Amino acid sequence: MNNFTRLLLIIFTLGALVNGLNAAKIKDLTNIKGVRNNQLIGYSLVVGLNGTGDDGKKTSFTLEALTNMLKNMGITVNKKDIDSDNIAAVVVTANLPPFAKTGMKIDINVSSLGDAKSLEGGILLMTPLRGPDGNVYAVAQGPISTGGYLAGSGGGKNFPTTGRVPEGAIIEKEVPFSILDKDKIFLSLKNPDFSTSSKIAYTINSHFGSNSIASPIDSSTIKIDVPSDQNIVNFISSMEKIDITPEKSAKVVINERTGTVVIGDDVQISTVAVAHGNLNIQIKETPQVSQPNPLATGETVVTTNKETNIKEETRRLMLLNKSVSIKDLVAGLNRIGVSPRDLISILQAIKEAGALQGELVIM
Image (cartoon, rainbow, N blue to C red; front, side):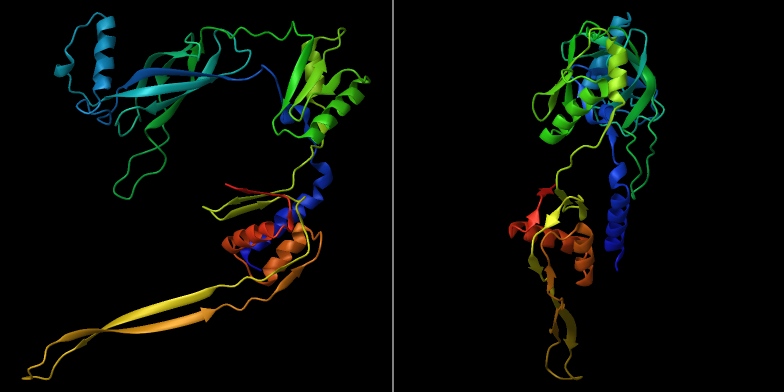
């Protein structure tokens, strides 16, 4: 048994053991409509770099930003007189969490915009962070942590042209959204499914002893009528803790670039016969030099000897019975000896034959 199929069998065995214990909380399956992050973005400069900043001759916008900043500080300079590689133009991004209040701090990401080699050791200057509406919601500043380094011709690990500033931004403006005045809320499923939507609504009604609290709208939305005698925050807190076993789709996910195959335990195989083998053809060329005898009038000639070897792998034909389990499928494929690449081809062929009862997703 090869390592790949051994790993698959272990995963499927563990999945079967915990099949009855895979319940999830409603808070992990859904989001409350309107309660979400908001993305922020800003443009600024990083200073204090050790000669790893932008080349001013190639990235003129860096010098433009520097001269404008100095002008606002009362210092007038000509950008033609500036020749510094210890500054870099950057884009700063952050996520503003829901219900964030003025004065709270959030993490920020800093990414080089020009041709800087590294942001390591740099200091981010004060940066207004704006939302899609153009308003400033936070202001960022601070030392950058890159977690990377530069290397020689062999390359280097990580990406020193990007970094983070933990708690590097202070929230200056709150998003105008309140949940206290809501008499109803809507849950959005992270993975839309009609069966799961109906099951969540039924479970919520059973938990609170009412048939009119939750009602499914479609495969991704559930309407919740908040009881008038309950505080909405306490109600949501109690509702989010309810356990439910979500319905799963029968899927096989394939990443052909990496040879990764993930098979859900609900996938079934109809009766089908599988044979898989490879024809290997190897052509070997060996150059030979033919020289004439001493004092002869002939010429030296280079010839090539070609040797062709053909080898066909012998694989047995395997019969998969109707509704065979994933464990049986992997065991059967292991008997005819398959690699991850072989398994991808076999699964695609089984799907094309109409014998794979599930969705085949190719990434």
